[in-house]
Image 1 (tube, rainbow, N blue to C red):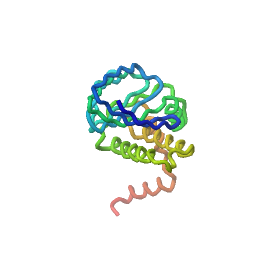
Image 2 (image 1 turned 90 degrees about the horizontal axis):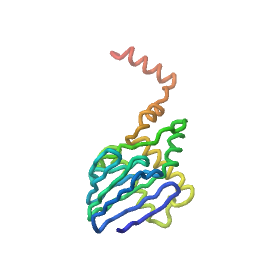
Image 3 (image 1 turned 120 degrees about the horizontal axis):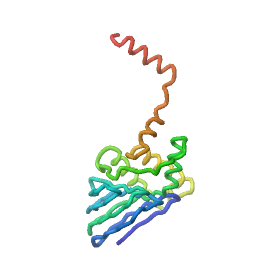
Image 4 (image 1 turned 120 degrees about the vertical axis):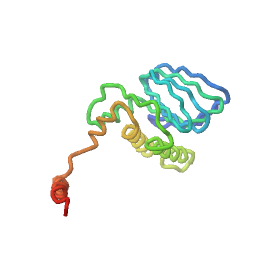
Length: 192
């Protein structure tokens, strides 16, 4: 096993490779989430009751409160974002302006080559490249704080999970009065 790791405050980003097939029974992680972006090889995972195969085409996500078992192929290489559960739940509470009472559970599969999965990977690749530099803003205390806030907002607002609908409703404030009047005028005079 080879692992390159950068620890922030409430997150860690690592690149892991295996030389042999590896089986991991993590049980219920309890205190963290893991977002796996696989570059080569594959993994067979069981997250809660879901059986899935992760590859370069499919990211895998484990939730803190769901049992996790993994089997990684010998040639596997993957980038892992580990996020501490208390920090993510606190951030979700701030976004919702409410207390989080149920555990966050992400959908365990995320297509890597399109939509939110592709956007997530671009952000993680950028951050990974920046963290290899000595002169980067992203390792300063302010940089770490803002990077974590941005990543948590990205995860919570773009990836599917059990609070996604509540967040979506929160993000749709009423339009200002002048916009409503303009929309009403357009509808009333559509033929013109």
